[in-house]
Amino acid sequence: MSYIYIYGKPISMERLGRSIAWRKVNNEKNKSDISKLTYIGERVECPICSCQDKKEFVTIHGATYLECSNCGHLYQKKIVDPEIIKKIYENESEYLAHVCDVYSSRVEMIATPKVEFITQAVQKGKNDLEWFDIGCGACEILSAAKKFGWKVKGVETSDLGLKFGQKLGIPVIQEYLTEDNAPELVKDAHLISIFNVLEHLERPKHTLKNILNAAQNCEYLAVEVPHHPSLSAFCSQLFPDNVARHLIIPEHIHIYTEKSITLLIEECGFEITHCWKFGQDFYELLSTVVELSGHEISILPKQLLEANNEIQAILDKFDFSDAILLVAKRKKD
Ligand SMILES: [Zn+2]
Image (cartoon, rainbow, N blue to C red; front, side, top):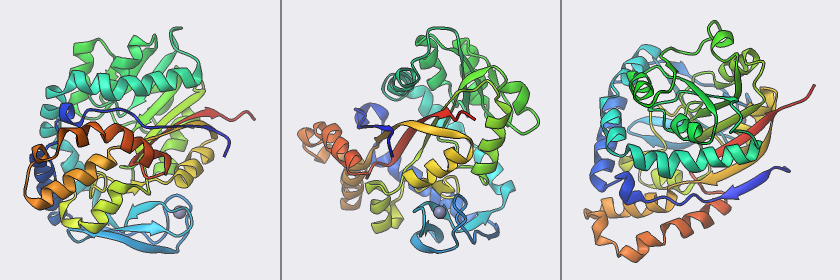
C-alpha cells in the first residue's frame, strides 16, 4: 500500500488518570454489564469481508471475540439485544465526570495532535471549510479543530456534546445520525471525522456508506478505530479476567485490522492517504502485570514510565498498536 505511515504519539498516562483503581472499576463495570446481557443471535460471517471462516480469539466473562481468517477483523460472536445496548449508553455519568476532570489534558494530549496531523494531511484548515465530527463526545476534537481554523460542527447522542458545545461555542446537534437526517446535517461538511465510533456499530459498512453518500461536498474522511493485532489485545487474551479497556464487551463490537478498515473505507468510495498507528500498549502491559501482583503503578521505577513513549513507538512500528487513525480522500469517478 502506498500511503504515508507515521508511528507513535507521546502521552502522559499519569495525567490521563489511568490508575490501577481505574482499571479495577472498569473491569468490574464490564463484568457486571456482560452478566446483564441478553442476545438476539450470533454473527455467522465477518461483518466486513463476509468470510465465514474464523476462530475464537478470547472469551471475556463468558463473551467471545472471533477473529476473521481472511481480513483478521475481531468481532463479537453474539449479537446483543439493541435495547440493552441503549441502556448501557444512557448511563454515561462516570465518563462525563472523568472527561471533566482531565478535559484540558485530553484536548492538549489527545485531540490536538490528531487535528494537526489531519489538517496537515489534507492541507486545509484556516480557510473556513467545515469539519463535521460524528459522535463528537465532549467536543475535544472540534475544540482543537477550531483552533486550526476550521469551521466546526458535530453530532452527538448524549447530553455531553450539547453541554460542552454550549460552553465552547460549538454547534452540536443532539441526534442519532440516520439515513433520513444525514443529507441535511452533513451537507456543508468538507471533512468528516468519525473517531471511536465505527467499533460500536452493528452495521458499520451500511452506516458509513449512507453518511458519505449523503455528504456530497465531503472530500476527506478521518477515521479512528481500535486496532488489531495489538499488544493490548494479547494482554487481554492472556488475562481475560483483568480487561479494563480495548476489548470492551458489549460496546466494542469490532476491532479493526489495517486490512478490514481499508476494505470498509474503500467500499465507501474513499482511498486512504495517511495512516497513523499509536497506542497505550506498553502501559497496558505494565499495568496488567502490576494489577496482577496486587501493587500500584507507583511500585514501578519512574524511569520505566518515562521510557513508555519510545517503547510504544517501536511497538507501533511493528504493527502492535491498539489504535489506528486513517485519513482518506474521496475517489475521483
Ligand atoms: Zn473479514
